Amino acid sequence: MDHSKILTQQKNYIASKESNSIQDRIELLKKLKSYIEAHEKEILDALYADFKKSHFEGYATELLVTYKEINLFIKKLKKWSKPKKVTPTLFNFPSSDYIYHQAWGQVLVIAPWNYPFQLAINPVLAAIACGNSVILKPSELTPHTAKILEQVVHAVFPKEIAYVIQGGVDTSTYLLEQKWDYIFFTGSVPVGKIVAKAAAEHLTPTTLELGGKNPCIVDETADIEIAAKRIVWGKLINAGQTCIAPDYILVQKKVKEKLVKLLIQEIEASYTKHVDQSPDYPRIVNEKNFERLAKMLSAEQLLYGGDINERDLYISPTLIDEPKLESASMKDEIFGPILPILSYTDFDEAEQIIHHYPHPLSLFIFSENTSRAKQWMKQFKFGGGIINDTIVHFVNDRLPFGGVGNSGVGQYHGKHSFETFTRKKPVLHRKTWIDLPFRYPPYENKLALLKRVKGWLT
Ligand code: NAD
Image (cartoon, rainbow, N blue to C red):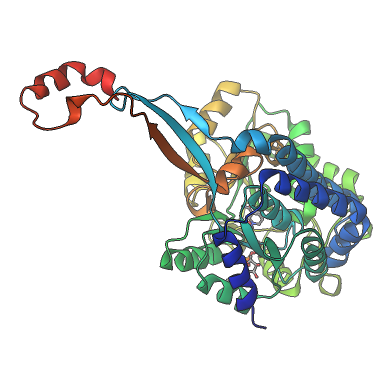
């Protein structure tokens, strides 16, 4: 299919002066909210059809965050968009100095499958609110949600403002060959590097929301009961297919046995002993990912689980005992309901394991030793961290969300999304009622004066 026409149409629209006002954009956001509200059931059904995500999880992790983001932009867009006056310098006296916020222009959003609705629509709505036009390419692995995303975007936005192009790698490759003003990508590290290379060709700025191996440390002072509850919840929501989920546990040897016992107890309290029959437990998204995860289980010592059913793409919650760092489960991000448990005796040992991997997207520490926990939070490099819980930092849009190093480039959510989808443009307004001669040649004896007043000038 030839997409060049729509790309040109958007380009022309952005280049023309008719791009919509802040009030127009607020109206579009209101329309988006009403449309989603009116089609909630279809969206939740699509998520269930794609990988048996329960309506509760669909609502909590996809719709709720979307509503929150829309409401925030409706409320704050005018305020955020105002040029911000900054203190002028004496050197430029008299002047008024401002930071304007300017939309980048034409934005490409490439989305993943794991939270297929919110990870697509949230960057789209933020980009549009900021005055950009957007092409969205949803993931081909969640076709039901991709279809409803197209329906939502095409019903709410004129196509010169937002348009959905469906497809897989070929479509993505074609889109990445085009020139964009900004690319917002969420997905895996290897594809993130492909996106970064394509963007470099046109020097296009990017946000790359990627993944990593997220450590979850449990020390000997931790409240183990609470830790077990919060780890199981954060790990098994979306069947572990969450970029910020705990990837592996590092537990102090003394408390390992207790933690394992309570983790198993919590898994069964949440999903019963027959997890495959629980209406709340999602499936693995496709065969390729199922096979990748199933391979991690062979030749490992399991503490719990290990049940698989290929026809149903089901993998039960599984705890692996002390895997080697070279084993399949410890090589790359797991992205599934498998949780390796490694024990340590002293912090140096735990630290070495964490440093064995590139900077993760998140890091969790369960500890009642607050000064030690805070010290670890300071010391390690990671996207976002939590003391005594897992994954919930994404709920607070006042906290910027994104990775560092291999786990990503750039941040978004709430006001941080506004900052991502606009460029800060400095504008200085000099006044003409006076023109001090100091800066102009001939400089003669001005150097001595310059040195004397240097502290006040800038
Ligand atoms: P993916 O990288 O395979 O795919 C993401 C998108 O890129 C899809 O739309 C896909 O069609 C496209 N794509 C795939 N291969 C491509 C190629 N060769 N060239 C161009 N485009 C290509 O990722 P995924 O499997 O959809 O999602 C899982 C990954 O995403 C995990 O690594 C996870 O950690 C990460 N993730 C990160 C965040 C975050 O916010 N940081 C959120 C969700 C998922």
